[in-house]
Amino acid sequence: MGFERKEPEQRRRLLEALTAARISTGTLWLQYFSIGGSVGEYEVEAYLQGMLSVPELERDLLAMAANELLNNQAGPHAPYADEVPSSDSNGSDAGPADSEPDLPSDEADPS
Amino acid sequence: MTKKQLPLDELSGAIGRILGLLLTEEKVDQAVQSLSQAIKESVPGTLGAGVSILDSQARRTSTGFTDSIVEQADFLQYELGQGPCLTAWASEEPVLIEDLSTDPRWPEWRTAVSSLPIKSAVSAPLIANGHSIGAIKVYAPEPSVFDAGTVTLMELFASPAATLLSHIQSSETPKRISAGLQAALYSRDLVNRACGILMERHKITQERALQQLIGNARDQSITLQEVSAELVAGIPADHN
Image (cartoon, rainbow over all chains, first blue to last red; front, side, top):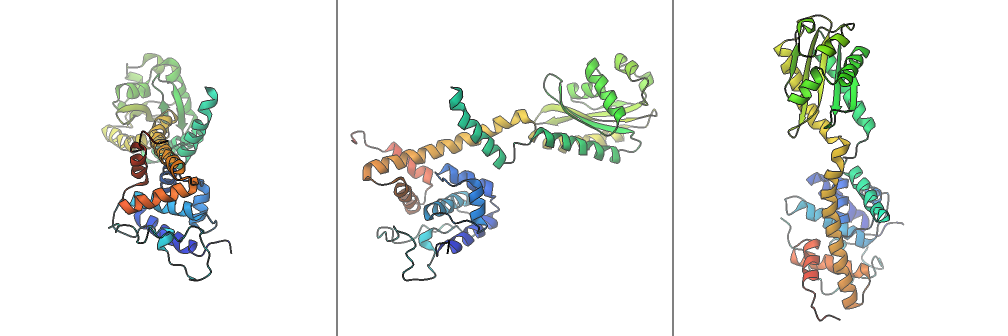
């Protein structure tokens, strides 16, 4: 326990996107801080290494920060929590506000 | 007023550290020391080499040298206010001394170092972003050890060294930080204000408001800052 179901997958793909675009943790954190992120730089570093769990909202902000830095360039983009399939479909109870019906589809294609 | 500055200073420190710009004096000293050693080993006939970083008043802020002779010769230059390195720094041109005993350019310094084994010298200015930030120098005990080739070699050393050293000039750091810091704080403030508007409008938590902003940004394929700016700009005047 300790990690939500979606978290490892979301984290892995964020790291993949950062690595492909050669974005450093410091750069990511500054962007994330700029858009209202509240987790410290060391914690973000620890999260990226899979040593720390952070809340879904902060994970989505990190994904958004990464995607803003990627700025539509080719390569993988960082997924949001609702884009990551739950490995276990029932009873996962991952997020309390997960059933938003007015956001049915995913983001615009980033390429 | 003083109290107000504290968080910003802390933040400057944090961001400077993150961007790798806030390097300590210790690291500068280490860098000029290593550079001195590299110069000495690369310039044939050199007895000793040194690096000086100067501020705009020609005061030394950092210094590195390989031998005590260099230390003494440099000390005398800055004490007397004359010498090849100061000339190189001030004129932004390299200086070649083929035989100090017949060179009339720095009479006091020449007399002061006459007991030291120095007859030849080359000094090249360290120029970064159009500003002279110091000089590197080599000394030799015999005349005519160095020539135009040595000058070229020293200039090859000086160019990248100046660029690198300029990044660890502590006086530069606050300027560099403030641009990035201001942009980050401005953006963060905008996002927070947008959150505040949504919280008030929909009676929701800050967390929920931020989620909604993320959703809007994704829907419209624009940045979170842009979504926030639109929201802040578009808030109706009669909003209660």
